[in-house]
Image (cartoon, rainbow, N blue to C red; front, side):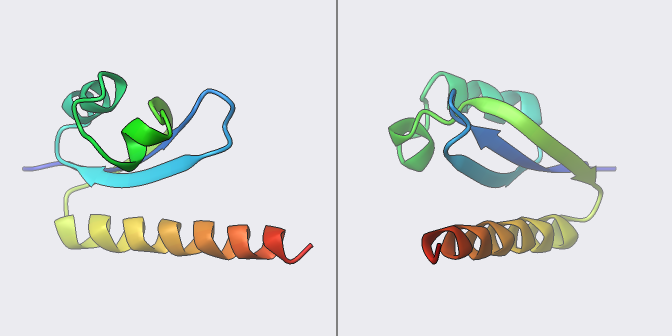
Length: 82
């Protein structure tokens, strides 16, 4: 049975979040920490695991990732309005 992980990474000051899905959490964290993946996580130095959850269904993992990203965007917009 395959396990999928939805995870949240942050930078050192907890000011930036990255939300992702993977089937190998240890490998993925290693890639982020060693900047083997160019893009958002390398640019903002998000390499500290702050949360993860697991599931056996890839569709529910992707849906959960989208849900968390939508909540993050909603919170960011709310902060900007104050």
